[in-house]
Image (cartoon, rainbow, N blue to C red):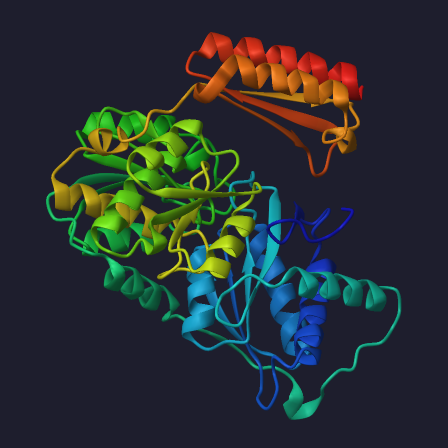
Length: 452
């Protein structure tokens, strides 16, 4: 698998890349590293462990729980819950560590292990690096210092986790959803229980699809990566909107009453105006990645709001938000972080806030999302090139300058080297789709010529 930790934990094909032995070893290593860092000082450590419904999550959960308990950590098993619920409970219960088993929007054969620090925040990069190093050291033969007797961890189920998370979501909702009919597509994933429960208790009439997880059907033709079913259901039932989550429900995409997609950029724009109106959008600033549509930036400028852009990945958005105290950030993919109420992207919370805006204003989602116009965006992957020279090639810099002159202020060019493959991603936005395609094609050829 190369470096184990990626931008969102450790992922791979369950029982091939991500084995029970690896999950157990990483959990023991995490416990030792956090103990050495002083996290457990003066008390018996406690970890919250949750998972999505994947079949492989059953044996991986057992491995993680065994590893933690063998290292002297008491474990609260919260069962199948969304990633943001596990993060919330880690903070709410004062736990020293949280572990989520999920591969998010990936297909069912994959799975992943994600660690949360005290408070429900993502582990610092240096701690992940240390966990990986300690795991590798002991995998090759160095013995663990193992507690015995009363020193081993105890394990119990924490069945109240679902209710505490739902109660938290309802407590931060600015107004009820009475009068709204909403279709929820749960992707046969981790939110299949808590999301419909929360929307219903908030007052909405709920039609649920993709809410019958069997361990094998997660993300299969449904959810935020396959919007066809939620589109059709919204139109069929005459709903006000549709909400689609991914497998671990840390993201949310939406559909308006006509079945049109409302992506993460549009959701961010709607929520930004709502939060400013309610006086909770600190510094009138939204954080997003460089992949956000130019139409999003132009809309915020028009509304007198500031956009701060980061590298691609919700971890970078979150780092920027925490460093400067911003309240709202996210990605085009539907990861939306409302930092006052969540330490990670929370698809259920995002959907609730979006629906609350509709209920309070009486406006349609189509009308609200119209605050921004998505400019045509063309993305071309150029394989088998030297991605390390993207920033140093004079030939490529000249081609980019020519493209930017042609597009002017109504377009944008972004060249991004892949972090894992020998390819460069060419992204072009323009007011006209044909112009975007033409410019992207020429830039792709320039990348091949300069870096091939």
